[in-house]
Image 1 (cartoon, one colour):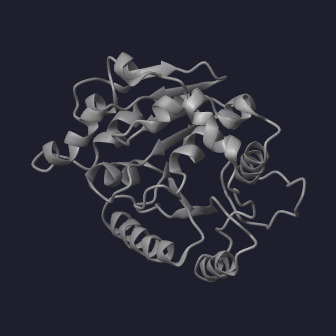
Image 2 (tube, one colour):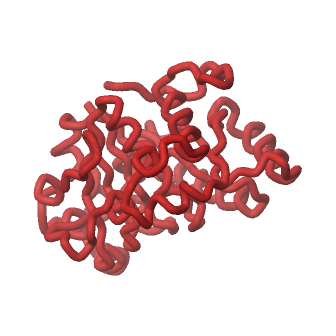
Length: 269
């Protein structure tokens, strides 16, 4: 049974898509069957895997609105063991169309149940908003991975997301929780960055990844080539950092740092 992980943060530009694409690619290269579900109307995960949005016959919009089954939307990427349900611009209309729909927060969950056993990991790339589509992802997932910037404004966003998670947990998904917080575009030379990390570790002990993703030009270039960073430039700092993140997800020891016990509970089911 696949582990379902929503990658969420209502703030945009924090590296959600970059995290989904690169973690998925690395896990796929390790032999795990991975499915990515692009729930962002911008469709960046879709293009990040080299899939042209205009070529999609069935998209995330269709499965959430019940117009197609998830099996009809699956596209096999050119990268080992990674499939995707792609998104197009019409996904933006879901927020309005679901407002008066029945069972509107369980639609993605019902679709994923039909394919969960076929994958080891299912990643949901959430939109940068706490709307109905994101709520669908939180209802459907086992846990949440939160990419965030080491900035003080980001603390407010984390607090809002945590409150939303508690509401969903109390009403729809009793086992839901934040399983990991990943700092992205991180600069260890800045005092504010280190202060924010300490603050987050204080309130979310053992949930912050030891690995921090640095700002990296090659990591920024890879999406324009439709490739995860490990296929674009495996020797780059960005590729090395995401590989270390995956070691933490899999519970494997880090090469450069001793892994903190109990950081993550993910594993192949």
